[in-house]
Amino acid sequence: MQEDIVLRHLKTIPEMRSMQEVEQSVWKMESPVPIHQTLTVAKNGGILIGAFHGEEMVGMLYSFPGFLNGQVYLCSHMMGIKSGWRHRGIGERLKRAQAEAALAHGYRLITWTYDPLETANGYLNVGKLGVVCSTYIEDCYGDMPDQLNQGLPSDRFQVEWWIDQDRPPLPQGDEQDLLRWQLTAGGLPQPVQVVDNIPDAQILSVAVPAYFQDIKQKDMELAKAWRQATRQVFTRSFAAGWAVAGFRCHRGEPVHEYLLVQRRLLSLPQAPWQKGE
Image (cartoon, rainbow, N blue to C red; front, side):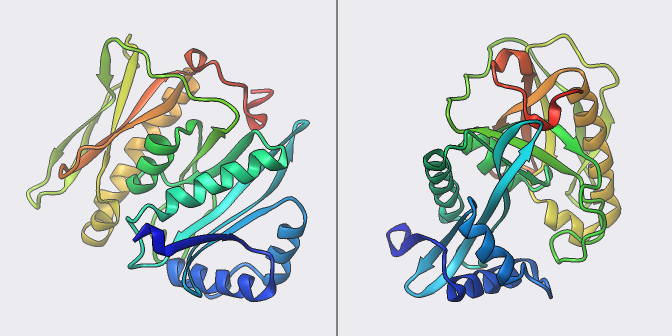
């Protein structure tokens, strides 16, 4: 139950130790972020929040200040929820609390990276929180040996959450899909065609598998095909001035969809890492 979960800003060494335990539980990493680093971040403009059930920390969020091209923003580096506590709205509560604290600190932009094929994150980030994205980073972190990422290039969206303004609604009009798919004999979705030319439309849609980790476990070559196909679609679209600004969840179906619009229609500032492009 959500009312059993209490959020607290993390400031003490025991809290940082609990955060390490959540990190190891979620990513199965041998070396979590050192306490001396997280403690320093908490004292110098960072925002670290824990989700507690009683005295047990079941979720954590770790973010620190960023500065680039004359602009200060908040880098949200990690958020993790222990197994058994997911799909209860804890992640959204952590992010909303982060935004509230960030505004109080004077931030107006929060950024983070995530794998666009992890659609639970896509639904939260784009569908619920309202982030936008027009930055795709190929193999962002290099090889990652942890349980969730191993075996694939670590491609990432770098998203923008402009917390001082509402995202405008998506425009109405013609919609075209950029990635066509079909089911394999084993019932898994597979990409079959990437549209060569970006069509003249108000909205573009890009299919992504609903259960990517399941595909990875059953057919790694198929997972790689999804990585390559979506990489091609997103990098081409972003270069042409489009931005991810919506997420369509098809519950019970094998794929969900990202929705893209021309970034200029969103009337958003330019992200600091986009300056000079």
